[in-house]
Length: 231
Ligand code: UDP
Image 1 (cartoon, helix red, strand yellow):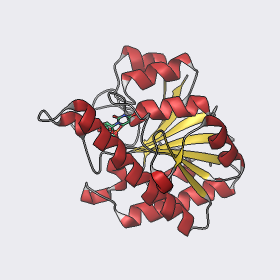
Image 2: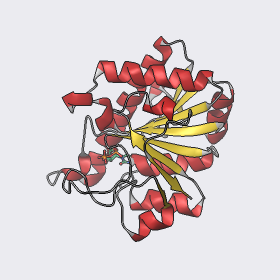
Image 3: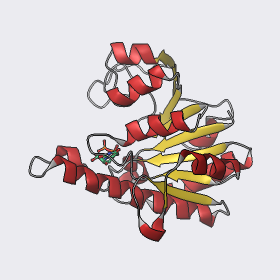
Image 4: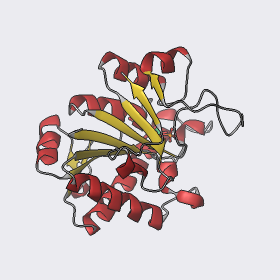
């Protein structure tokens, strides 16, 4: 794989704290990203916002406003993880779909590809810039735009199961599954809009647990313990 889009769930960055950042987790994520970049892979990153804000669960505020806060939460996450990456010696660039002053650069596909080709870890913060979308949708959209070879989905859970393992202790984990099967069985891998975008554009995924030791690096060295989702 030459170019990948790594999606980190905000929840997974929070580690055991559940909210905000678990510094040790984030330092380790940056170390792993460095190892992958040093092996010659171009890495783009989307980060969720669940460690700060779950806009959609609020019944007491306007959805568009709640989603705007959610998008800003993903900007905070990207600024943080980008700095962790910079501390390891990596070069980084943070793009947003809306103007964030001097904090980030407005996204363009050409500028993003150029940054990737220069070896920069390239962050797509702020989701799609639109409410009623998610960072899953932003992940699918940007991966397709930059022609990534695959999406690496680092979650709080270690792969794709036939049912929720938190609820059903007999849930079975798949080694391999197709996007068609994900859709048919309504499996919660990425949201429906993102699943359909990946299906329509033949974008495969590798789903794994961020809390498993060295799991980002392991995706590249044949020690993968998650689920491959074929396009
Ligand atoms: N969000 C949005 N548009 C996007 C991406 C994200 O409105 O294109 C908002 C939405 O409110 C979402 C929040 O940002 O709840 C954080 O994104 P994430 O995908 O992590 O949502 P989660 O499922 O974790 O709440």
